[in-house]
Image (cartoon, rainbow, N blue to C red):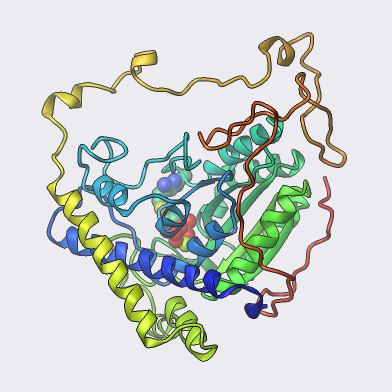
Length: 409
Ligand SMILES: Cc1ncc(C[n+]2csc(CCOP(=O)(O)OP(=O)(O)O)c2C)c(N)n1
Ligand SMILES: [Mg+2]
C-alpha cells in the first residue's frame, strides 16, 4: 500500500508532520519566553494522526480540530502566523486577541469549525455540519477528533448515536494516546480497543497505528470515501501516545519511564523518514531543502506575530454581549427558498441520495453552490476539487477490523 501513494503525497505527509512539529517547537520557545498567553498543548509524537486524517479530506470538506490537532489546521491551509498570533493573543490573530489558545475557525474559506473546550461537543456539532452539507447537496464530509478520555463523555455517545441514525457523512478520529490528563486509559474504560465503542451504534470502525502516517492516511481516506458515498459515519481509533504532559504546566511525572521510552522509539516523523530514505523517495539534499524551507517560513511567521500589536484596551469592551449584525456574521444561509423548507412544504426531499435515507432534487434542479469564492456554479457545475488518489487499499498495517460495508441503522 505504501507504494501506492505518489512520491509527492509521501513527501507532503512528511512536510506537514515536520511543519507541525516545528510550529509547536517554536511555540514552546515562545511559551518559555512568556509570550504565549493561554495554555499550550503538545501533539509531540501524535503528528501523524492530525496530518494524515486531514490530508484525506477534500478542500470542500469540513473539520473541527481539538487541542492536539494543529497539524490538521496546517494541512487545511491555516498559515502558521494565525496559530502564533492566536496563542500570543495578538490583535492580528483570527480572534483579534480575544482568545489565547486554539479556539478559532474559518467558516467562509477553509471550512474549519472552532474547537470547543467541552470534550465531545464537537461530535453533534460536526454531525450537524455533515447533515447540512447533505441537505445542500454538497457531498461534503465532516471530521473531528476526540481523545480516549473524551470518548467517555455523555455527549460522545449521544452525538455518535445521532450521527449513526442520521447516516451522516461524518468521520470521527478517536486519538487514543493512553492518557487523559493523569488518568491512564485502563482506569477510565475497561476496553482493549476503544473502536469497540462504534459497535454500540452500528457504525463502521477501524483500528490503526497512529504513529504510521501512511496507515493513518489509508484508513482515513477509506473512511472519508465511505462516508461521502453515503455509508454513514466511521470511527477510527488511532493508537498513539502523548509524549508530553497534558499542557506545558504538567511535567507528567506519573507516566512510566519505560512507556515513554517505548514510544520515543516509535516517533512518527523518524519512522516515515526512514521509510522515505529506504525507498529512495528522499535524500539528504531534499531533506535539507525541506528543513530550510520550514525554518525560513517559521522565522518570518514568528517575527510577524512578535511584531504584531496587542489589542487596544478599549477593544476589551466590545464583543462581550452579542449586538447582532455588528457583532458577528453568523446567520442562516438558505440555499433553497425558505418556503420550501418550512411547513407545509418542508417535506421536500434531500438533494442527493443516501440509500435508505431519502433522495430528490432541489427546486431549481441543481445542487446548492459551495462557498469558496472559487466555485461559481450558476449553471450547477462545480470546478473539480483535486484530491490525492491513494490507489487500491491493501495496507497490512491497518488492522483487520473490516466493518460491514453497509452500516446498520
Ligand atoms: C466535558 C469536559 N470535561 C472535562 C474537561 C477538562 N479536560 C480538558 S482536556 C481533559 C483530558 C482529555 O483527555 P483525552 O480526551 O484523552 O485527550 P488528550 O488530552 O489525551 O488529547 C480534561 C479532563 C473538559 N474540557 N470537558
Ligand atoms: Mg488522551
